[in-house]
Length: 408
Ligand code: ASP
Ligand code: MG
Image 1 (cartoon, rainbow, N blue to C red):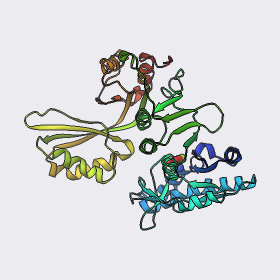
Image 2: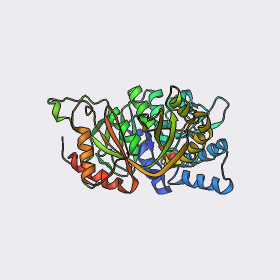
Image 3: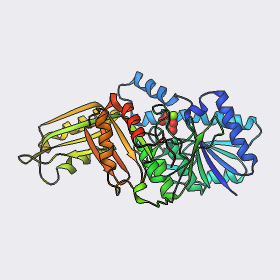
Image 4: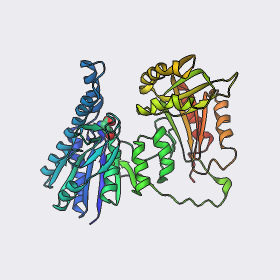
């Protein structure tokens, strides 16, 4: 029998009325004879509120306790959703991440799923039940509850879809699809009917609100992901393997403009220019699970070099502390940081092999008087670090300059 996995974000289950609405949507799918598993996030801003609450009683909440606390948010929304479904006459059951067999490592606050044992979900489905699974959480080998990182319910949903062999994973949210740029910044941004995993991964990592790990999981397991609004019936965006037919190489087009506004930069000055320095600098950050993004190492002058890299602003103080702690061993002179940066990204497959994309981006930014602090490129992305206060303007100028409002 065909199986679908749905995911409903926090804004889709923000109050009792919305929860009942979601229950009706799920019921309609069930009425067509399909099996359905639905993953929900915590109601509205519950997770933020729980984090704030934790910080009112403790300067640095214990990570294990914090995860256990945060996991309760999804239990509230999911049990209410199940009750609403039962009220409509559907047989339904809630499973916590633990009960759904979602096994993770023990990196609290950013745990990764290493396996899913779907037996319980499957047996409930076999009994004809709608299964509601609490998003964003899992369990370690020692039976401690973990969370997957902010926005992690997307990843729960896609991981479950992969483990259960579902036909598709539908992500229902408060935006009705993936756009060529954030429509709140660029009013003529265009909704994409479909997008390739690779391009979406870049957009999700740098802007469009989806947990990037969910896209990775979808790509690796071949799960098509459909992003649409939970409030309307308008068609959304299908993320899947897109075969691009490009008749003319020179007509390669950018797919979208992404941005990130919470970028912080750390510069380590006058490091000795010898093998092992970069490894010694970045290994401790990796061990703590701090994601380093853009990295720039200057060419060495008098056998010393500066290394700059960016992290999310929320990781800045931890990262600076770590680097300061190892600075004497590294042999650098000082650590400086800047937390007022942002990044803009032009995304599109085939760009790297098409001359002129990077220079076009730089020209557009230059004409807009936007200074570029750092530059990186990947096969399908060109990224610039700029001042945060210029990010909206940069996104608008790039969307316009790359003519993304126009079809095809
Ligand atoms: N409730 C969690 C958060 O707000 C997980 C999620 O929304 O996916 O980050
Ligand atoms: Mg949420």
